[in-house]
Length: 76
Image (cartoon, rainbow, N blue to C red; front, side, top):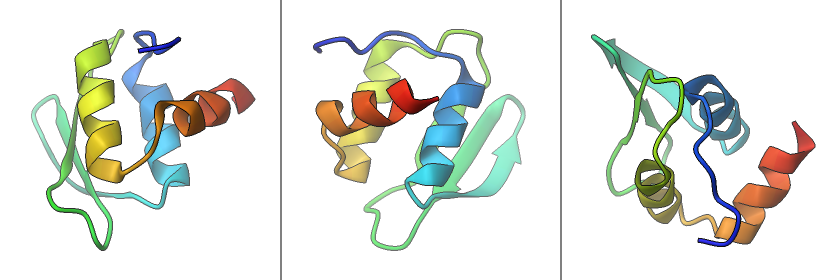
């Protein structure tokens, strides 16, 4: 996983917005993001430390490499 670490949902939300996603709806403590061309929505739970497996699954859906992700997160 090369440097991917748990981050706050707010930081991941900023990354999603930068990646062209927008908030479609919110249910309880889950946020649902989408953008044109995605095979399924991106689901983010409002937790202090978003688990690595959720980040990795969402990167796969977005079609973004770990290197691209780390580069963008490093800018914040």
